Length: 272
Ligand code: SAM
Image (cartoon, rainbow, N blue to C red; front, side, top):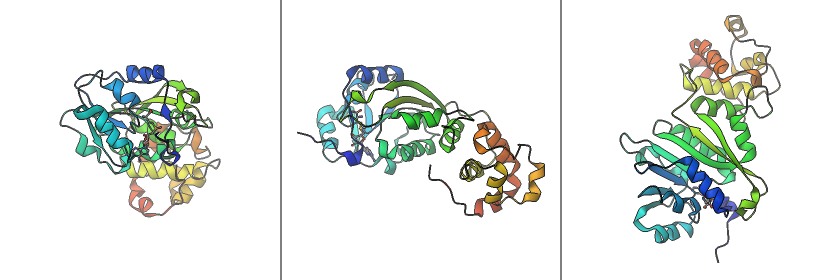
């Protein structure tokens, strides 16, 4: 008998109605290039194959990867590896962006999200089941407790949509938290784009690093000389969680003349 491994975040989806709902909302089309992260025992894989002739799955588990090969044969290419080591560029086919789906392990949700965000040029969308609390942070709006680095980054690179909530009783073993299925649409990033992506990220990370404090303190901490403050259009008495994604883009663009210096400065950053 297979014993689920806690270390790999293995909570297998048991409820067929939930699996069907995820796949129905993902809406696979026969010509789609689909990659599933962490297929486990194939709860979603089998349903996806009702719509597409072939798909690629990435599974790290030494027992489950060979089982998937046996179960699905040539219809599924099994990449037996850590998803964080897989290069999306090598999976993408010309003129056909990848569609990603997965009920992903809770312990590495944020690294997986950033790994997919980095591949946004070759990924069109990601339907992903995750811990409800992380999903709330991703879709969080300014001036709420959920709004932070994860909200600003994800809402900058894609449009996140909350599809539905899933009870913890839908899994085996039953996890300690409930889940949410989100759709991340990379074809619809925020309309306002920063001149310098690295600087945008640095400003967001650096200012949220001093949560509950003002933007003025955050910018000082980032190494912005106070003499520059006057020409900035955002109100520096605000706290970072009061700024919209578009405000952060404006701020980063106004700091662009200082980019070389600011990007050199090492700043203590939250690891979110
Ligand atoms: N998709 C299956 C389901 O819904 O029943 C399994 C979901 S389970 C929450 C997460 C799956 O991801 C497990 O099969 C686990 O072995 C796999 N996994 C964990 N860490 C991984 C990693 N770094 N790379 C690829 N797969 C991973």
